[in-house]
Length: 435
Image 1 (spheres, rainbow, N blue to C red):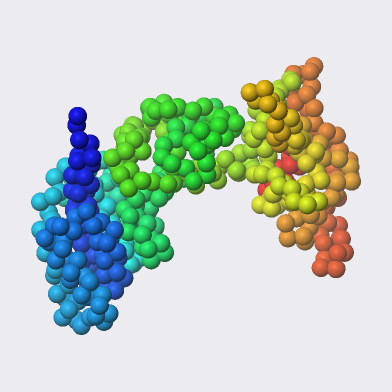
Image 2 (image 1 turned 180 degrees about the vertical axis):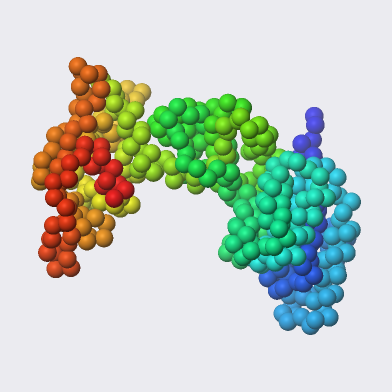
């Protein structure tokens, strides 16, 4: 039988060595070494004891420990340590052969230059040189090459460009100063800046998700009117990357799916977008996106949905909340009927359970008063007609709302601002959300 443990040990051993080469190269890229970088290197060596038997590694660990014991290094000692790291990088160069190892080296280099959360010009130029020498056109090298070429094309690095690049590089390693972790990992990958569209679009999920199981994420996406694909194809619309990444992400299906998506994106006719879990969450809980989902329910005898207009509903003691605090005019729990939200009984596997459901009929009524989030403005409905399905026209009747707007003083005095504004029920709902 093939010994997979032995194979994994050998692969991880080489992976650690190439990562260390990148880290040491990155730390000395600007010809200086500071206390945070020394501390980072010590922590990394302690967390990667599987390579401690390597002579060069053992010597480096000894040098770093001695540097930490002294607490304050002289200029000469700093120079000696820097030179030691430079020699270490050179000694480990032989271990950089295959594509995964080259990528590990680059990720290690990124860890080295970002360990102190400072990015100077020399480090940026050295990173560009590392990318250039790799001769790779694979993800994530291709992303970095494009960004660096854009920044350096005018030979001038602005502070905004420096900050943006540091933010991008931070996505390829945990923040040592904040977490104490020395892992080289991808925490957030997103190559899409526009609004995420669910209706009729196809989604593929890869990685592990902080917001729930992959199945739960897929079901939430289906409830928004999208479809799910298990594989990355040229016809896919969105690849969603999970935020919890394992140490060997680059060798896993997670890394391969992203790489395949990047290959398809090279075709200008391809409509595939790569988004992070954070982007997906923001879109899935975006009230304006949920308005679009509400419109999917506009049909005769439509089934109620478990995707609500609100992010969640809670009830504590004698008070409930629709959690609409992000709305311009938060709607109170008592008005859940106006949003067609109700608690229903459903059955699964012959067992009854209760769940909040969303219907398509918005029905604010005369006398409803809703305050803005800052309590400085309020709206009062004067007249209203609820929405409803028009069978003769085979379409949703939009209803109507006529309302007055008032400013509210600190003493509670209400002063009219506008009078008798006429809208449909949906337009009124949009105003409550957006202002």
